[in-house]
Structure formats: structure tokens, C-alpha cells
Image 1 (tube, rainbow, N blue to C red):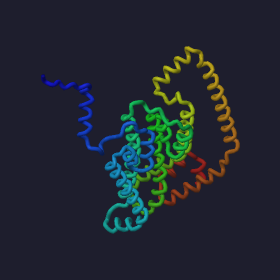
Image 2: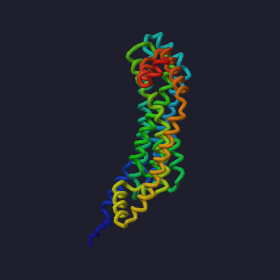
Image 3: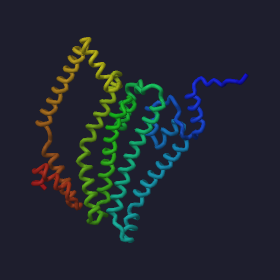
Image 4: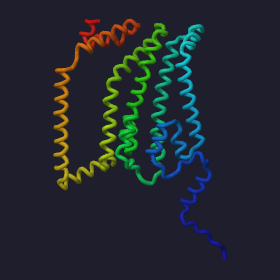
Length: 318
């Protein structure tokens, strides 16, 4: 009598064969925490790869990190030598600095995308949707350190990506402003220097927004971590709100929210009244006049002209 081979689950057999044919470095361990993968990726390049047992890829990213930071340190330490070398060989220092600023922006965007990819790549291996960490303070603390980090720990990757994009612009502005000021005296007039000055002007105008958006991200991470239902997907939250309305529970919640909103509006109104009456206008006008005069002495034109248009008193005082 011929033997009959019975395969209980042919799909599972094919899946096992495919897995055996793959290289061990290309596999992502199942059941990993996407929040931890994102955190490891934030701490150092390739950290998420090591967390997911992808050693070869982790070492590659770690090598890129060492190369980037080493190149940055050498550029800062030997800036004068680089300037003399470029001038002796008839090359533009402005073009070199513009390329460095473009490379910095590329690296920051690349790092943000790598962290986001670490989260999504690890989340795909899980059998259940990641609902965020149980801790209420860790997302808040992480958002204080890096915008968007707390949102990813709360299981909100879309919102986290928005704040991570803000982090890219903030970090770029914080680095660009002092770098341009220190290197400006070595830049000869050219179209490249005009582009650098335009980037510098935009970065300076963005600086005052950084603390406000930073605090907003931290507050959002803390609030969501304290109210678990806000970690649900948007459609689920809409359905939950509809069910609460049908059960008349929303009335009590809306009433509490109205009280909080009224208190917040009153606080903001009081703050604006105090700000209008006690803001030291003369002091800051004098500081702006001094800053505008110093920028003009350095040879910058865009930002001093913009300050003169935004604050006519500053232009008159200058």
C-alpha cells in the first residue's frame, strides 16, 4: 500500500522554507517593542538594528555615525587650515560651507527617517498593534530631550513624525546660526554667500518658535500617556466619542473640558495684560539696535533690513 503524505498546513510549510532560505542578518525578531527600537535608534545610529539582532546592518550604521562625527570634529578643529587650503587652490570657501550645510540637513533628515523606519519596521513584526508604553513619565521626559520621541513611545507615529520634523528644523537652525556667524568673515561676496545668508536669516527667525513647540510636544506626550483612550487610532476615538454621546457621558466630559478651556483663556488674557503693561520695550529695543548694528558691521544685509522693516523704531535708532 502506497504511503500518503499529509500536510496539515501547506502555507506554514512554505513560510518555514522561505525563512530558512533568508540570511540571519535580514530577519527581524518577532514580538519586539517598536518604542524600544525607536529609542535605541535615537541613542545611536544602528541601535535598532542591534535590538532586532541585525548585527551587520547595525555595525554599518554605527560606522557611518563614527565617520560623520569624526568628520565634523576635524572640520571644526582645522577650520583655519581648511580655509587657507581652499584659498591657496582658488576654491570658494562659501561653496564649501554651503555644501557642509546641505550635508548637515541631509544627515538630520536621514536620522529622522531611520528612527521612524525603526519603529514601523519593528511594529510590522508584532501580532498586535503597539499601544504605547505603560509609563506616564517616560514619554514626557523623552519629549523634553527630543521632540517626537514621546509620541512614538505613546504609539502615535504620525504625530511623532510631525514633531520629529520640527526637531530636524530646530537642530539645523541651532547649528547653522553660530556656524555662519563664526565663518562669515572668511566668506567672499558671491551667490553662494547670499544663499548662506538667506539660510541664516530663516534660521534666526525660527529660533524663537523652538521653546514653544518643544513645550507643546512635551505637554502632548504627558497628556496622552495619562489618558490611555487617546492612544487609540483616530477612527476608534471617533466611534468611542459617538458611543459616549449616546450614553450621555459626553455631557460631563464636555463640561469639564469647558472649565479647563475657560481657565486657560483667563490665564492667557492675564498674561497678555501683564506682558503689555510691564514688558521692557526700551531694553529690548536697545538690544535689537545693538544686534542690528553688529550684523551690519559684519557685512550682513538681509537680517538687518528685515529687522528694520519689522521694527521701525529699531531702524530709526540704528
